[in-house]
Image (cartoon, rainbow, N blue to C red; front, side, top):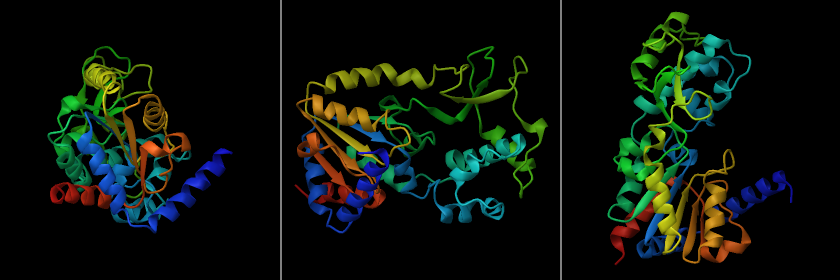
Length: 305
């Protein structure tokens, strides 16, 4: 089966499942969570999108970035990856997006519901998200590992030091002075390292100069949790993971479910709920609105003995 065929199969399966009542699958999910020695939460963009932070939505773009609609864009994702932007437009769009996602967007209810669901249970979070919603919702920072890091921090591009600087003031300065229609910012507003004067860049994985100390602060704790989970009753709770970067969460969760005798996989996904046939008997495919499903799961946890 080709990649395109697999994606089409996912869409067809999602459409089929969406017509059914999710309650039996949510009850099964709750039973698995209650019986688990370890819960490994894997969260992707779909979790934030379920609360309105949807980078692929035209309605979200029209609501929160109307000037980008006037520039001809159909989604925030399209604008942020437009190769024809000028360099100053790119920096302006990045700053506006970061303010929206990290600082000004309200805490998403799905994260609050998830926290209540796992409160008092033995969990750890692995997330590809860079919006810091887990921290803002109140999750224990010592139980969250986000290897991509966050859009909140800046570092020296050289780097001449391992210091990090909070980005809110930087983003607000850039957006305050940028052209509100073209998103082109001023060169003089772009951040520089206060030590050596080199350009400051966001502290995110992927660049050769990446300063890793903050993002790696919970790595050893996560690896220890992962090692312990291999020998107990473990639930992989996968939330909104698609195919942009499946190698971080989606594929490892499938593989460990197959390899670990006591593991189960719960895949909650609006568009891509399918699990491989070889682990289907130890998996739960939950389709539909992710935020609504988490809220319903929390309600069931409160109602059922």
